[in-house]
Image 1 (cartoon, rainbow, N blue to C red):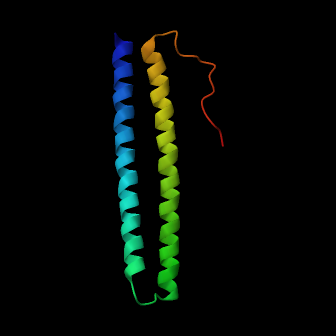
Image 2 (cartoon, rainbow, N blue to C red; image 1 turned 60 degrees about the vertical axis):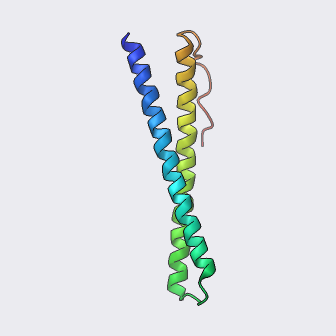
Image 3 (cartoon, rainbow, N blue to C red; image 1 turned 90 degrees about the vertical axis):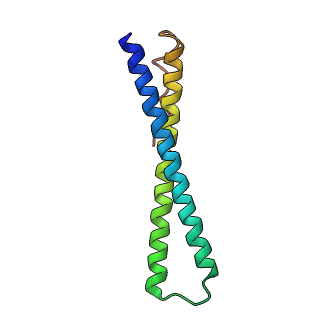
Length: 102
């Protein structure tokens, strides 16, 4: 009984995290598109410092997107593991590889 409650709690936490990361990723992409549209419509040239700042900010956004994609992959692995455990105690293979290591 306690195991079922624990698994249900973990599943709900995983679903909530996936939802939050999805919304976070969408918000970043919307902001990036808005910045790109604004930059494309700007007729005047930026100063060197402004261009450098935009490039640094873009690099940070791209890094965040990679992190969000990695978190999404981890959440998908968690979902698959919980799905296997949910099917029954003998469906989970403890020897299965846990994913690509970097």
